[in-house]
Image 1 (tube, rainbow, N blue to C red):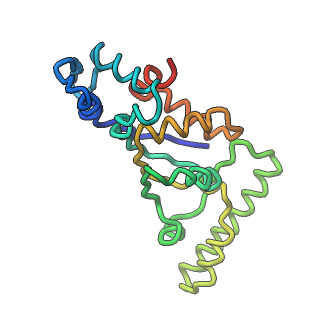
Image 2 (image 1 turned 180 degrees about the vertical axis):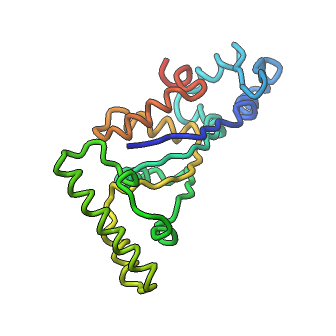
Length: 203
């Protein structure tokens, strides 16, 4: 399971203006904003597409297009996402500080692909986690807190606010678009809907 919300894409205007610096071709810039929406002009879009096709060294302007997004996903998926540390930043909800702050519920865990028997096991584990959570709140005995942390399954869903740029996103897309984990394929589907992603990277 993955939930993707609060997407913001920023800095197209500055990125494409900087892309014109090497040739001093600012006069050819023709992009604009309509309200809060950035619109590539034909000249700028043609330049952007040519630079993207020319390779990583030439498309460096896309590193200045920033994306902020909230992603809620299971820990087993975040473990793979953490491969992409360079150029990405994430602030997560804290299991260390807040794992005991609310009752455990089955919906706190990704279980969309569990067999009926697997779901039964998860329900039993959630009940046990809730018992230990209550014991910790009642006694403040750290052994119960450690029990929560060490029993917490990798299907536990964590929310992170992530900041990336279009170069990071392009790299992730081509590495993961056919991954066997559904979460990766869903993320890549979200990427395809980002402004100008298809025009810059898929055409």
